[in-house]
Image (cartoon, rainbow, N blue to C red; front, side, top):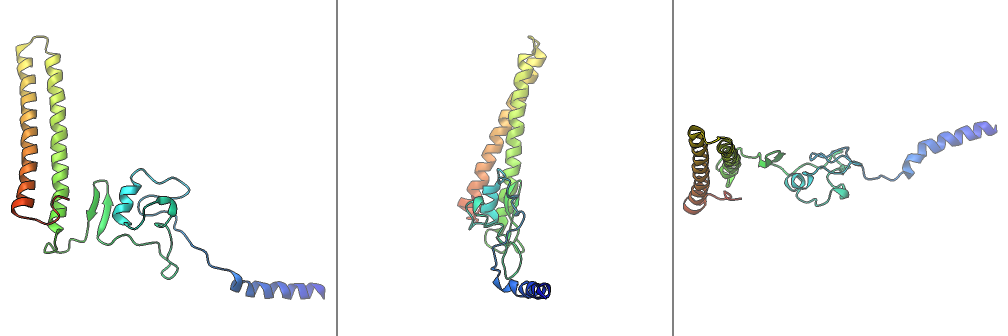
Length: 181
């Protein structure tokens, strides 16, 4: 008889135990910026969080992982933005009539092109210097090294002046909004 009462008490407590459980905050495994506790956040987490979750300032607060109890989903990122290795890119460019839409795409492309041109020019300056240092008084090698260095310097000046010219025309003359950002 005691076993039967204990059995019914156990079943009774099992069915009514759910009413006494309080809900806790639930967290996703990882956020879109690569933060997966207990591991520390990645080195680029701060920039990614500024892009996708502008309201969050610290990874330790785990606000980017908090699951919404109504929707049962982790927080949605800021609409119209995507974080890539190139930085924060706006993806809500469905219409170029929107203010700043064309400028954000062109600005990213110009940054990539001019950074690449500058890096290549520096490499050619280094290579030309190496050719001159190892020429052993050979006039052809010295002239070849000089031509490499002069060409790299002219190309670098051309690239820097084109950056200045494009920024001046876009912000000063054409007044394209959000271009210099």
